[in-house]
Length: 229
Figure 1 (cartoon, rainbow, N blue to C red):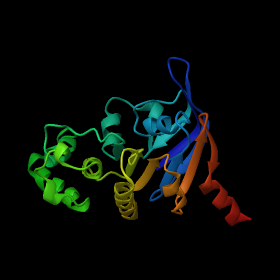
Figure 2 (cartoon, helix red, strand yellow):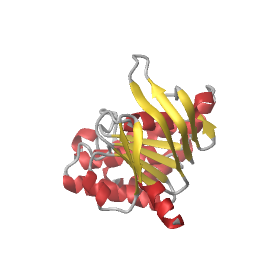
Figure 3 (cartoon, rainbow, N blue to C red):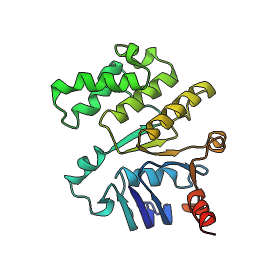
Figure 4 (cartoon, helix red, strand yellow):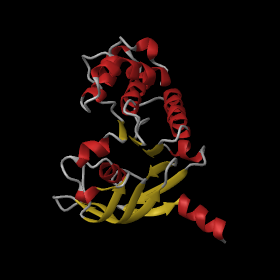
């Protein structure tokens, strides 16, 4: 599903985002990206959803080589991806259902299918009763659930979450994380960048740790090596 092969990312100002990064994430896996601010987590996520392109090396996502994407390929790839951010990025003056519907409208979904698809994902995230509410009327955890519903409404193969619990209290964090686990259990790849090491330690999910733009630890590689020995 996702493959980085000797991927390097250098930004126009000369800053190095990634240095010779290689890993693979197969179908159905849940992966944590960890590391301090500036370690390279956001650079990896931005390459996955094609906001950036690698300076060197190769990045493949769902069969697409990111460095060779044409103008028509980017929307096709992004229809296979859901993206969730720390700051929710909801439309303030639109209702919950309008926020989720927007993700379908911009990808050209048939208008008559939108209401049912919106209610399906709002039910999935436990917010069907808040469909007519506005973001300011919701708690932080509820706003993040709306953002997750918006990311899910196109039935993505991959869900990318950039510090999705960073602005939430402990209870809301646990609720959002449980929802991400349920999404992964349904077969969706989840790649979650986080500073919350307590969450990471409490699960058996694969962890890729970054430092200075390099992978310094990958529990998936270590587990595979252990199984072979």
